[in-house]
Figure (spheres, rainbow, N blue to C red):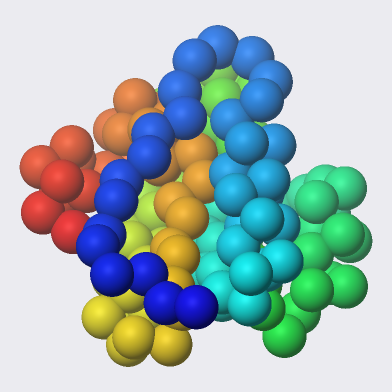
Length: 126
């Protein structure tokens, strides 16, 4: 199965559910033999989805960049946080253009924009 036309889906809102929806998309895609690449912004904890995705490693790859410590500490993001987000965007773009994956998920990219780790126009340009 291949995807003929590109689509953009945005999961947004306060609280839980965004990552779950995105991982659900990857799970459905894997069931159809499609490959998915997931970049998680501002996450470095071994969340439950990480363990589940390991079972699908031939069809789903997940990479984490940065963490949310500055949010919890109510501090502005550091240079290290901004570099991690920039690196994640670079990796996402590189992966998207490689043609090796059918779906590319930018998990928490809207949150990264909200905290000024990324510029909206850079994400739209991608």
